[in-house]
Amino acid sequence: DIQMAQSPSSLSASVGDTVTITCRASQSISSYLNWYQQKPGKAPKLLIYTASSLQSGVPSRFSGSGSGTDFTLSISSLQPEDFATYYCQQSYSTPPLTFGQGTRLEIK
Amino acid sequence: EVQLLESGGGLVQPGGSLRLSCAASGFTFSSYAMSWVRQAPGKGLEWVSGISGRGGNTYYADSVKGRFTISRDNSKNTLYMQMNSLRGEDTAVYYCTKDINSGYVRLCDYWGQGTLVTVSS
Image (cartoon, rainbow over all chains, first blue to last red; front, side, top):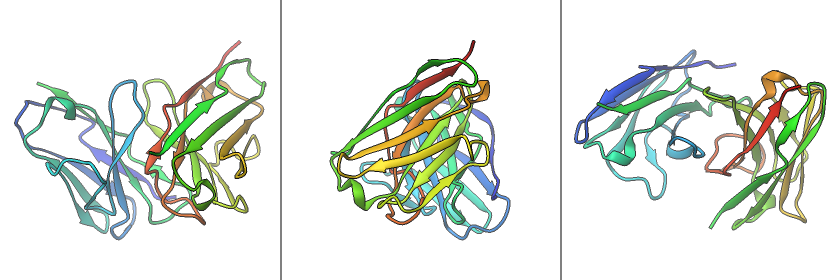
């Protein structure tokens, strides 16, 4: 199974900042990388699929990039509603669907 | 609007059984694969099982293989998960998710609100 590793595990930032979260796959997954956002007590929500495609309704301040084994999720001009936990997930070799351990984005 | 509504969670003793259901609406249910994803308290996401749109192909995580059975009734737009021989480590919120594909599981573009399963004596 392909393993996914995210860094950092947690991150503090202020409203208006730009932040970047990294996800690394244990082997090449081409561009088959997806990002989810989860707010406390809520279900996850798909943000980005195939590395850089924004899911419908997701604000353009979210962007994704990368291919092969290294990927990034960037959030520009952080808004209060962006403070959440973010997960990456590979869809190159499924099943199983495998997720990163999550990155918790907190308000500084 | 896509809606996924899970039910069937609760408290069960170790070794017991539980059946989860997920009622789907807002899309052509039989055209999409579906999955169950769980999240233990304070932990990350773990994919548990998936099923193709027509139900002919099923997939399981190693951690539940032989204990859990996924199924679907396309006439009722409902996904199921029969969970047997439950263990403490199965304690989690279980989410029903919709895929973008029909034949196999790839990603989860819609999620239900989740149902909590607690395995404890």
